[in-house]
Image 1: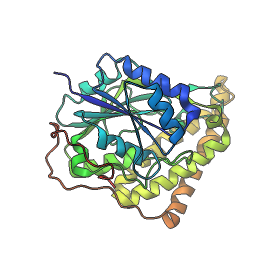
Image 2 (image 1 turned 90 degrees about the horizontal axis):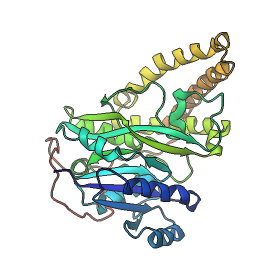
Image 3 (image 1 turned 30 degrees about the horizontal axis):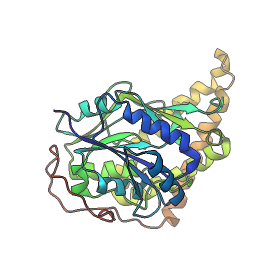
Image 4 (image 1 turned 180 degrees about the vertical axis):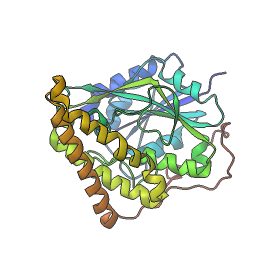
Length: 334
């Protein structure tokens, strides 16, 4: 029997209304039907009323926690009744087999959650200077990620998790992650590392065939946003390092910085020899982006407010089977 899946979509602005409708429609077209669609509106009464009028087959609820993606997800988790919970961006569209593919990964009882690839859907054209290794700045899968299904340190973005996890380790830390247009991130990274500390033998699975197309507006393909996102990523990493320890918080980032990026810079610099005249621009963007990320990390280490992770009591047994449905209060994960 297929598991029941609660699909949670978090939204905060009417500017994405068309994309939100496309996102909900892509959930309706899944080969594995969702048990329920929960649309969490982040402190926007006008959008809340509009969504309730438009999406009659979905549960539309307000974020009951602190403003931001983490609080919105926690509100959705508390309202969910499915054995699994899946999270989507309000400006993303998933392929019809997205739920089916991720649920197949979770047939393995040692897998806590699974996530797929996220491809950019540019409003205009991808700038020639924009390196694929920095696609994470626009919420997409960056070059260097696995090309086939395999275990990873953490998931991010469009993911599907066992709901029972949250009963044990708590929800997303509300001091981590994006708030409105402020380009912070890494709420998924912190949560996955925290859960992995509880269950070291468990795994997170990346399935690149489960694709979500993610809308990238023109203002996020500009140099100003790129620089801001890199800087704020460094701040986010500094917060995570304090929460889970520097070794855990930066293990994957060291490989990315020491091996992936130098090779990308080298390819960019020799690009003109192969007719790729934008190569040096991408190489320069990588160097500046990395420098800004490091700067953000250093600044965040001294200035960012300490954040306590959301926790809940529990044992060390991997929650391979769902706990009984329990509707916690919206603030249960604070």
